Length: 385
Length: 123
Image (cartoon, rainbow over all chains, first blue to last red; front, side, top):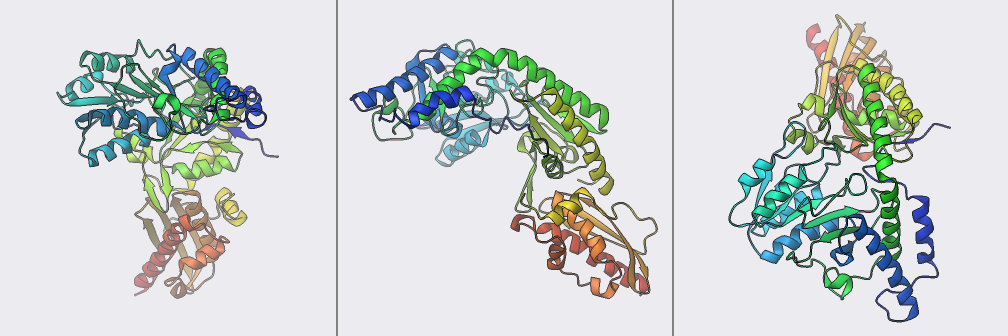
């Protein structure tokens, strides 16, 4: 059987066995609605409360400042729309490399009459905090900048942006879906007023995420109905998901630091191995301010999807930096914003490592990608793209 | 796997890949949508393909289609190839997913261009 190597942890992660064990009773005997006052409901409520405490403890905030949502996309929609609609009109600041959940939300708000500034990034994918300050206008009502980009792994200077936001009295939302549980986050020191984070990127289940909302931050709900989540997000709680999320966070609190060092070393091993064996490659992102497990590598003059297919046929899961959908290629807007030339950007492949990744996996990837790229280049007309 | 075993085999073991020097004819196909590109080179004897080689840049199906076509057109009369249809390329791969049909288009374009090149050189 072909060896299988999963290097797509920024897309999703396998649920940790300890998380599965914690969730299991909540699919069976503990099935009540947490809003119900009877014992069945109270048992479910206890699970939700414990999970909320675990998440809140992890980022050192009071539990009542955590709202559970259905996913990172909902959290981003809630964070950005919640801040904007609380004011009704005004100007928003974000970056050009945000996840679509933020970018398209800001675009939708523009269509409703809000104004927006999309900040550029440097060649490493970093926003200049000075640009944030320059973009602030008297009518600026919110700033939303991601903590780390999923494609290239660059970590933004969030604390500096947060300080500027605070000095100007502008609420600051951070999409921390790719960093939560991977690198330390201090919402007070970073001046964060609202922050999105998700379970399935950190070995929790899919369909459950959270939004931190600092007390006193003016937000409106975007989903209406019952009194759930202190009237901030209506809908019966996804109890098994919330319980799993809480456990996943507890496990991350225990394992995060050690794992960051280990996957960081493996990531370096991957890049060094590829750079030593494959000519014309480039590592994207910031040299030091980056997620520990992410390696975005450009292979010049090769189309990324052919590398993804070739590696898939060897049992290796990575993701393409440029996606060809129905015959239309979308060069990654993140790489375009970073100024990566097209002939490099089109051959970008992201590997994202995780807790199960081993040195043997990395060596197998290096052994596999080296002849593959050589073969693809041999069949390609030099200098295209 | 969303691709046929034939397609995968051509992708993993491309036949006739690489430049042909002093070809009797050459043609190029490009798909503007995604930048996929194929070049086909022909050696012609008695009006038929004596040897075909290709260069391709693009997703896996485009590379596989170029490899498959290099076998498909062997010994075929050049005049027929001026009308090569993408459907024939697709059949040679035992099918393509709907969103990868452009692979057959790019390669069929390149073959037709090469055939036209030879016909125009012949005068």
